[in-house]
Length: 283
Length: 352
Image (cartoon, rainbow over all chains, first blue to last red; front, top):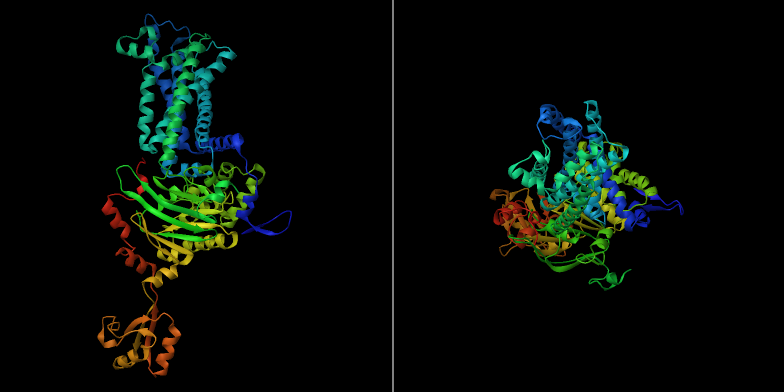
């Protein structure tokens, strides 16, 4: 099928027509590539119940199970969180939901490599690192939706939030930072293994890192090796900062963001080197 | 034109490879020193069984897989050093039509045109043109997951064209398609070369595909090119067409032999009576001489006043060429190769 040149009125082949079209290049092309990849992942998330429902139901289940089933923990001597156990658990579930949302991005990347879709992307865009940004942005959009829904359910179930508007913004930013760390970690695995069979390698370490924080009780009430590990686990600061912000306090917040930045830089290197590894292996 | 383009070996050729090697860790050489030269506007058929190294070669030429040894230039650009420029010049529809089952054809076009840097104002028009070109307008808003194999291949082909590539790599584009879909895709590929002047590098394990489409064919086996040339030249290399004549009366076979002697290489052991296995039929077969055709045979039989029950000319096939070069038939050779190596496609392994 041929098209007709608007200026000359002459018939010309489609392929050659597009060759004549000026192509976007440079940083604009990088951003466009990232944006369209993010669009595709968000589109799939919202149109595919198999992706949408677990992402929403799992955090809600954890929140309901933890906050409801363990509410008597707040009466344990030494439990000094001022806003009650529901809010205390919400602080954790929020971070957990954001983190697992990020891990799901790793699953998407692995699936795309398995199906060959990533080869299409790697051939089409000159900025392959736009893949990392694209999947990250999609994961953040999904996390915003899940976090918002969590807030609605939390508030409806009597969660006591003392945060001001600035604190709420910081909570969301903290969740996004956690989401980003998880995306970078999981994408590093996905780029290296390029198969969905690597899913447990993405999920298990994240699960362990999250559950080796003060999940059910404040850090002061932990004991033994769990306390030792939680003391050096950077995610402890993130979980605690989330809880502090819900109580309208800013303790640990700067440290938490600082740790996210440092760990994020390391994980960005991990993800990028994974991408280079995938490039060397043919995508 | 850049400096690289003018100084690349084989200037003017669309694809050049010199001693191209791909060796996987703990594996054999999937591609073992191939030399290639594909001229601009040519359809080059890369024919070989499964596991022969076709796809690995394509992955290297499309910059998706690093080269272990040797060098290659695509569109005048070095595949190892100028990957971005190579990718800008080429389109590729690789072995699996890598589509997102959740996206429609139009959404795929939106994605592909954006990734390829097509300005926003042109994306929709270009996408619609290409969807129409491959005959998917009626299914443009259906999810690709509902498409047949042929529709998926056609969409994949359309997606590979959004940036107007001058060189197109098609890796087994018709594998698994029904004859009708295969024929439709052949037409489209031929049209791309004929009307758009696109250079096409086509891998296939189908003899008739290479025969039908390719201007030149390279036959690859065990990572090495074992024969290269136009399909006609390759076939003529291994022999001339065979003519087979069955007279109405079996006792006329001696007269048939006599009549054909001028046109065919018969006699001196070249004549086989009853090649069908029934000596009573009097069938005579022999190879046509280089300058002779079917008309000469008919004239000779007519002049001798012979009544013929059956007359056929059997041209050598590319399968005969493959057999002559490798000692194996193309059909089933892939399975044998896999058994020998204990694996299928080389590119499944991890690279060095």
